[in-house]
Image (tube, helix red, strand yellow):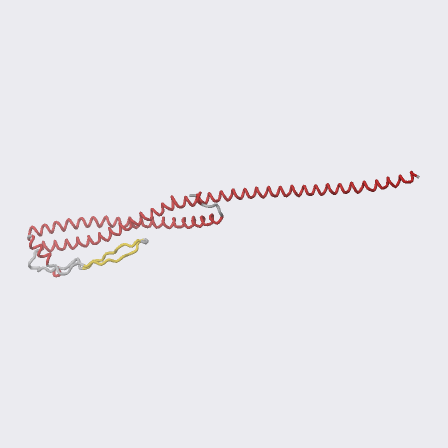
Length: 246
C-alpha cells in the first residue's frame, strides 16, 4: 500500500490526521465492545433463568392439562378453552442498550380471575382451573423469553459487528497507515539528506570559484605592481646613457 502513496509532506499530514482519528475510533469501539459484552452477559444470565422457568412452566402446564383431560375429558377441556372471550394483548416498545435497540414486550389480560375466563364455575372442576392458570403462567414466561431472546440475539449481532470493526482497525487500517507514515518519513528524510548534500556541493563549488577569483585578482595585482616597478628603472637607464654619448 505504501508504494501507492506519494511521499509529500501534505500526504504525511493527512495520514497523521487519519491515524489520530482511527486511534480514537479504535478506542471508542473497544469500549463499546467491552460494554456490550458486559450487558450481554447480564442478559445471558437472565435468559438462562427465563429458560429454566419456561421449561418448568411448560412441564407443569402439560401435567395439569393431561390431568384435566383424564378427569374431565377432552370435550370439557376444549369447551372451557373455547369459552374465553378476552384474549391477551401484547404491545411492543423499544429501549436502547449501548446503542442497540432491543424490544420491550408488555402483555396485559394474560392472568385472569375465575369469572373472567368465560366458562361457568359450576360446570367445570378445579382441574380445568389449574390447567388454565398453568397455561397463563406459561404464556407469560413465553412472552418474557421472547423479549430476552430477541434482545440477546441483537446484542450478539452488534458485538460481532463491533468486533469486526475493531479488528479491521487494529489489524488492517492502522498497520497500513503506520506503514505509509514510515515510508513517507523515510523518503522525506532521504530527500532532505540529498538536498543538504546538494546545497553543500553548491556551497563548496561557490567557495572554490570565489577563491579562484580572489587568487586571480591577487595575481593580477602582483603583475601590475611588478610592471610598474620595472618601467621607472628602464627610464633611468636611458637617461643615464645620454651623457655618456657626449
